[in-house]
Length: 331
Image (cartoon, rainbow, N blue to C red; front, side, top):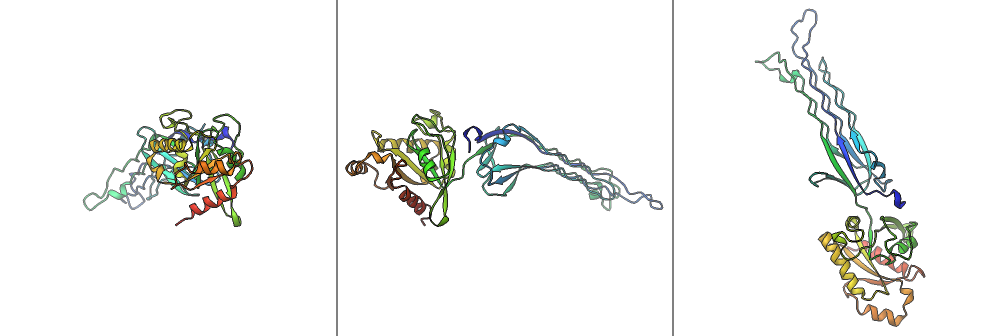
């Protein structure tokens, strides 16, 4: 996905339809002047509905569509005729979209499956016609219910990318390069920090026509959870990942210290991220000989699966895929 077209946050105004009023009609015919109440019910106002689409990766199509207004329901009629329901507005969104109330921040719903439909803003119910209110003691009710008003609210839609593997690391750790090597994604790559300004997704081909999805987010720096660098805006994208692949360059002065800083930033953003499976890839290891690699390995955490890779020479790239696949399907 092109970086300038990737939109993962929009604020929209949703106005559902007003319900139609019930009818207070009385049946009249020749020879039957007092036929009794026959007012029909009003129609429901239109809902605003979110529908998941696996073909979408961005909220770009909603960036300039700020106001969604559903149709009102029609009033009930005579002969117990119900009013027509207002047309619903169905908005397609990418999988991983979360809707929140713009004022309270309360989560309203989330879309995680293709074709899944959930009501974001319900339409007002139609009013009952006077036929519902007749009784032995009130055989000619002259009243009916008005329709319920629709809801007018501001909603925030946030996209959290759905991926099997999330790449976590400082700027220039080689995340984008790895993604470009193992998938058909074409992220921006350069020799300066923060070349990745928006998340990128890639489908990684594996053995026997299997595959998994890898997500690259902009590099993290110390203090990201407090807003430094690109801040925590993109950290939410790894909340949906099954595995976190930490990537640290072999020329780092202290690999273990960098790893601890990355863990700390994730913990400050969302402590639950530390419950995810973690792997560590030491990048640019084509610069290392066996002796240097052994020295570095001796300083790394022993309880963390670690692999030395090079996207430039394809060193251990297939072994990395194997490790990811085994971790994804471990019981």
